[in-house]
Image 1 (cartoon, helix red, strand yellow):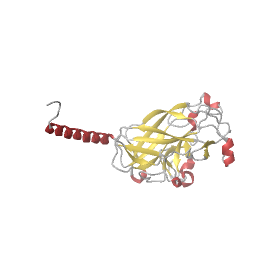
Image 2 (tube, rainbow, N blue to C red):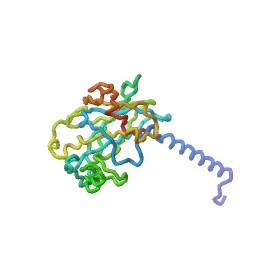
Image 3 (cartoon, rainbow, N blue to C red):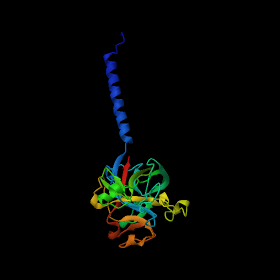
Image 4 (tube, rainbow, N blue to C red):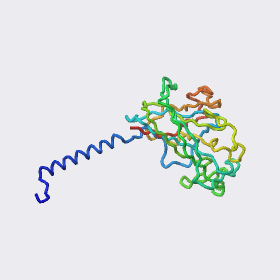
Length: 280
């Protein structure tokens, strides 16, 4: 045979290789995730309107999402947060400095997913809560020379990408779960601060410093309707879902101190928490 492969055998080898290639592509496709909800803009701006557990007496905050497509298993949920934490000094004292931008602080965050019942009521929790400790960034140092000249408040930081100044800085965190979702779910995040959250930390040494405790400066970012950030899926309601003792959140509906939908157009202005959900 002088090293030559018979024509019939060569044909079989080519066919087998083609079949294996198709199977490999199919297997890869079967494991791929699909984005089924997204209101995270790209690129991410410097910051958004945001609400923090410490500032607004909250334990839990989230919103209702309506998913598109058919992928529902093993979802990953990305949440946009906003950090107002400074490595030294304070935002409103016009002394905020972050000398080491690469330095992070660690803090646990909890993701909850609930089914939606009739009239938007909170249903059963979908699987267990997912708690993960994340490395959180500090916001950049104040830039009064740039920001005050542009008409922004002293103590804000300058974002060259948007040519704007902000008190806080937006950043994403991502949770991975093993649950299976329905088309409509309520997604929330929860975390502890000095006096709020499921298990408040209490008084700590950082409480008396000018920068305060970094976890008290963590907020959940909300996108306003005018920002048009929703690109995948739908938002069934303008209400947010919250557990808070701050009564002004509930001027048109909801109950302070009980987790559920909060209605107050003057307070919420239709803003929704910023999520991306992908699933298989």
